[in-house]
Image 1: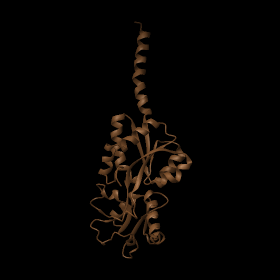
Image 2: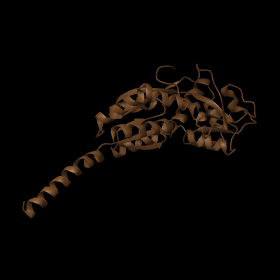
Image 3: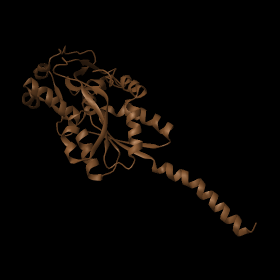
Image 4: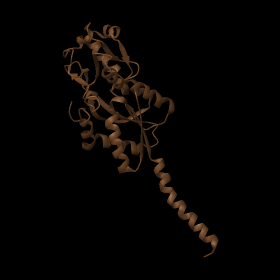
Amino acid sequence: MSDLLRTVRRFALCLVAFIPSLHAQDRELLIYCGITMVRPITELARQFEQVEKVKVTISQGGSEDLYNAAKRSRLGDLYFPGEPSYRDRHLAEGLLGHYQTVGYNQVAIVVPKGNPKRVKADVRELLRKDLTLIVGNVESGSIGQETKRILDKAGIYPAVVAKAALMMPDSRAINLALRRGEGDIALNWRATAFFPDNVPHLDVVDLDTRLAEPQALLLIQLTFSRQPELGRKFIDFVASPEGQAVFRKYGFLDNRAR
């Protein structure tokens, strides 16, 4: 065999070896995930990467901010907001497609560990003069949206906003402020108080479910996704019994019970 033929064969073998790795690089998913659900989604993403040999990138933040980022960039595959109102609000824009319910979350009163101020299971406790109040910003995150819905239903939202000492962009910021001693009481997604780093510092005071209704967590495919089949596969995985066990582990209700 001539030196030229040997060179051509070596080049061909290198090219064949390179093609699968190039394909693997193309198999990537970008998920826009609300702050509250980052932990279960990250754990499930790492499992999915191992099984499917793909790369999963998670962009986290407030649900409204994430939608606007996806809308501007037209990049990404899945959108996971903290409550279903974001799908309802933006559906007509045509960017949100196939989805599944992958769990439920619920708002509760969150207080420092041991509930030192003896806060009761009543949203009117937010108006107590002896309590420093923290609330979520309605413009940025799902907890702000759900706080407004609950307090409008109770007829006290304007009074609560006027009293609030701090207005935070998302559930994580609310919990950090409570942990730093910057407040005595907040409304927040109850599951976040059961995250391992929050358990030693925070307690939950549950509200009546007729007021604080469980809210569906919708994992939604973006219509401009470059990996629609892979995105659907990930949605199915999160909605599966294995995926739901991870959601229960982090304090969420699963998709089979409210």
